[in-house]
Length: 261
Length: 264
Image (cartoon, rainbow over the protein chains, first blue to last red):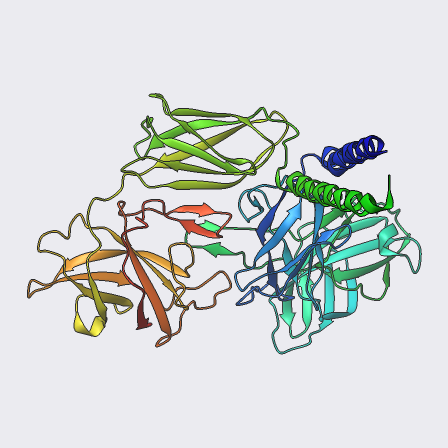
């Protein structure tokens, strides 16, 4: 009886010994470590803020780990288990940026930083300027806008979407162009392109073309420190939706049209 | 088995079970605390040079990583090889007696990678003591100074000022150091007309960050720490970890106390 109980104990011991470590074998190497990096934010006209605190940095999928940036924009995700993560940078009132595929081996900190690798995201305040009217006149485009404050930027960057279909979705636009327009009067902007707006558009002469635009922000200033100069990233590629995401693009204007000359 | 002995057996069993539970507990803790690398043939290699780009022999290169630390020494060609590293992220420390220490953070080693670290230069350390710094004086005391400079009277001996190199770090909190600062510049030793020695440092309130914002406003309370360093015009090496240029020639052991002053 005692012999068989001893045998049972040895048996139990053996089972627990191996089951106790089986997880380690499966997840080997089971390393944790910090992820350290920087993120910055700008207003809707691309001007830098005085401090960069309050950006929530969250690992995806699962939102398991999170950190908040300090006034220098620095964040430290603590004790993150090794793996490949998407880092989501979120701040209320700002567009969300995602850095996909961050490889984290664990051990001493994985350092993202804003140096060489374009690993520091730039977040932009949601754009409150609204496009009230657009008009394409031969080789120029004019845009009337409604500004939310007294500050009038001397230029705006527009992302134009074109389609032959009325009420089209910008995701299915047949052509997209980025055009910079300059202020010529209060709340009134005009392009000064050397090429006509029409050039390169995939439409036949006489076609009615519908178009709309969003205001497209990027850093007018870049961060620098002493002699160091940095430029971050402000768009990302969404592998599930298979398209580039522009968190720095305003809501689109209403639709306008012209006849292709 | 009679009834009289059954409680003894029960105690015996409980003892064994307790032992078993403790043993398994300690084993499972052991499993969490001792990660094993999936691969262990990673290598970090490179060359360590001096400021003049001469190969530096006998420099110690240490890889601090998830499984502890491992060191190697550079040969006469300045080359080191840290081999048999397990996969993980490492911090590499470069040091040599008489030279500043340099760090490279966030070096990933995976699989059987060989990681080459380029452009690692160690600068010779200065061989003098940090002078005693007295409270900050302002430009009005010294007509030949720039209006945005501050000066500190020192106990520097006469004629010792030419080779004396001091780098200052300024922050708006008392937590100021060579790794936590808003502004850094080289301080210059100057002999005054009366023969006394001062250390002059530019602290320009007009210095702006990328957004055109001033770093300091006139009269703002600031904190300064000065370090002995060996190079007159070192731009520092930008550290992704600290988010600042780090000056490897500042001597960690030779620094002033934190000095409070008002921005000029």
